[in-house]
Image (cartoon, rainbow, N blue to C red; front, side, top):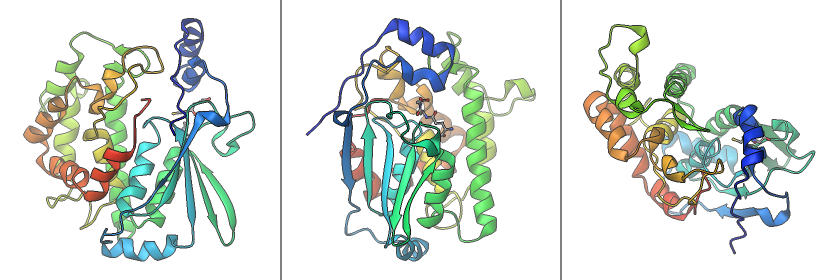
Length: 303
Ligand SMILES: N[C@@H](CCC(=O)N[C@@H](CS)C(=O)NCC(=O)O)C(=O)O
């Protein structure tokens, strides 16, 4: 049963929310907290997934735990965590909220989402903050490298990806849209070999990162880690099954392809030309049976 409520656009509320930025953005939604505004799905890992060596170890570590992941009905700050469970082949309950949390809920993330609940023999814990959740999940799922140095390398790559997201903000504002008419040409097509700091755009970052990842379809080592998941999420993941309207009231088309591009080809061309190793990672990760099943079954996304 699908209990989703389509979010209604309310310009007056939206104006107020924009003034306090992204964190206030959800206040723009005209909705009431209610149990009907939640969907719960048990994600069951396919039986035939062969665990990589390091994941097998972690499987024992998670065997006695039950995970529930709470986030809104879109991808946003939640999808990376979900794909960590998916790629590791570990079951989790995917609780998608289509309303703001009720007063007093989720204090671990200051009343916001995502949060991850872990129940095991020793009790119940809730973790807030997406970064903390992702690092915790990567550790217990065996997706944080084989040793401390690999873990540091994974962190480095994730920080490079954060730099890219921050650089993109100069050209595209998530809440309002493009900040200049030719933003796509500037962001995607500025050559990698610029000399001025102010001219560093997507290709500059990716060409540099490409020499830092493996040539074997894995960012670090010989199996998937948090870095592969984040590379896929930021540079590879597409979504055609979206609600028609984004919660800011505009068309959801800008959410279909990585980095708000008008087509997936925009991003792939950059990877083909300047970051072939990263492209290999995107394809290796996205083509796994786990991810293929997940993409087909995760359902329609609000954003
Ligand atoms: N830094 C926090 C940000 C959490 C956050 O702002 N979550 C948004 C959804 S993406 C939210 O819950 N907004 C509702 C609100 O601020 O009331 C994290 O990464 O978890």
